Image (cartoon, rainbow, N blue to C red; front, side, top):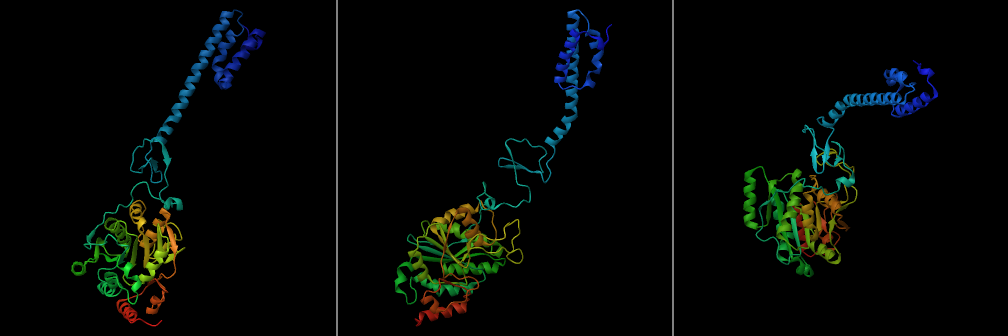
Length: 413
């Protein structure tokens, strides 16, 4: 029998063809060692049918070897792949399936059109934060327990809602006998020109519940006397200020269709109504806020007004109007209320309504001097007569009544 090295040239060509076939399949020399005996026995046989038979047997052996090799490879890698695909998600491995989030409570997840979800604890970008969410995140379920029998008339131009605390009866009474009385009777001291528009205003006080039922009974008795209180079904607390402002929007949206303006103010304010109405009459105001404008205020991380990074992730608030007194145009009221259900709340109501919702909706901020900030000095009667101010703050009952008395005396300013 001829040795492997003594094969004639015909066998050499056959061996070269065989090597090209085998090495082209990616096998190493070591995997061919078991087939060399068969090759040595047949490679130099001069009868063609023997050569062809040996070649066929060799190819069959190689195919069997490849099948076994790939089966062994799959057997060693499949368990790890299966384990990775079906393992229980951890707290940091949340996936989002369309609008349904599968979190760590899931034991298995069938993924269809999966897209990455934000990692837990990741702060939102500005575009993400100042956007309407796809689903309601805080549906407004509160209602008014008490409501004026008629809040707005058919020709009401502006409704004024005064935020007050259940125990602040003295402040409400001071407003009722001063500028609130001017609204009710349509007459401003020494200003006959404003009578036609003053008669188209309506005013009411917005209050929440008190923990003491005796206080709530007193509020109901006050409502029975004056018919000018909107009582919300939530506890009156600074953490619920946004609920109170959203009740404003809900009530006006339902009871005052077509009203041109909503003025929100506090119970320690005086409103120079003739001057404000004159400004609104001379200003083209649609989809707008007007009030004490704050273009870039720092966010408090400590103290009573603190917000955590999770509640508000940025260092500065968006532009907003301070809540002491601001005007909302009527074409925004319904849109603001509806949008609020799709944008997470913060308890600082003026920032939320005029700042956050304002930015989400692309609302215009009208910058108008004359609105009081917290640090503004208390006004005098001459400040109102000369139209230096639109609103005045720190007007506690005695001070408000004294200023109103001065105004009625027609001061020479």
